[in-house]
Length: 170
Image 1 (cartoon, rainbow, N blue to C red):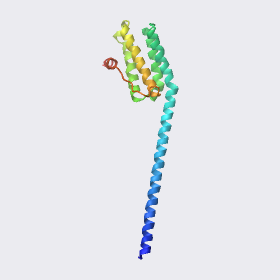
Image 2 (spheres, rainbow, N blue to C red; image 1 turned 90 degrees about the horizontal axis):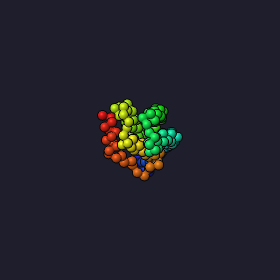
Image 3 (tube, rainbow, N blue to C red; image 1 turned 45 degrees about the vertical axis):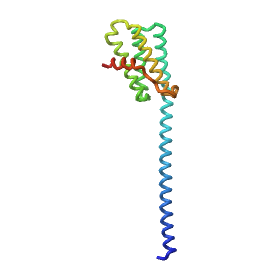
């Protein structure tokens, strides 16, 4: 082969490799962009559902916390409150994050234990009601965090309340 033909063949080969690499990187970038768009669409749809359904649960929580603060709580209205939360949970809890889902399950278990355990045979103490009110406040904070209202800080759970939830499971 003559030198000009060899140079032309090498140039053509290099051009072909560069073209193939450019097309490959372009396709990979396009795939990455599409995946990002899909992830963003999913996150937005999930966020929209949370914004649609969380206010109803937040209302149940907030209203019952007010019942406790006003001193009008009873085992009967606690049972109605738990039932409302259980019904809501059955329909919409799939939108919870893992942490909120765990807290919700433990909170509802704790309420069930209070209602059907030895404490239900007698009236709850003021401290028991205060613990329930504080747990409600924490649940409200979880919901706010999930829709971005508390986006600047992570929720810190007091150790005493965590121990209360854990001990209620045992």
